[in-house]
Structure formats: structure tokens, C-alpha cells
Image (cartoon, rainbow, N blue to C red; front, top):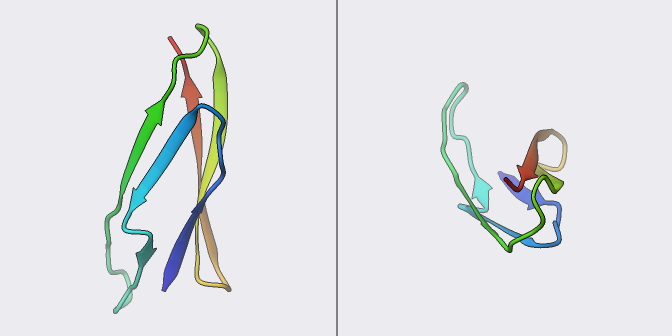
Length: 69
């Protein structure tokens, strides 16, 4: 089972569903949804976060970038 963790970002709420994934066979594809809710920040402000799935032995990560336009 892989559990998710997301770095906290000031001004952005990041939600994931589901918060864990269980693969039952090799090469199986599973999906998840990420939702972002952000407050207003000055134009061209950039913030960064990281989403990681881990089973305690392996870690799969994705960078997340936010820019206000």
C-alpha cells in the first residue's frame, strides 16, 4: 500500500483522493485526484510543493508549481 504525503504550502490547500493506493498486480494503473484551493497573491508569485507516494521502502514523487497570473 502506498500512502500519500504532500508538503504544506502557505496560501494553497492541497487535497487528494484517495490518500492511499493498493496495487494488486504488476503494471496495474490506478488513479487519484488532486484539488488545489488558493488565496489571492501578487501577480507572478511562485510557490512550490511536492507530492510523494511511499510504501515505506519505495518513494514516487511529483513536483508541483504554482504561479499567480
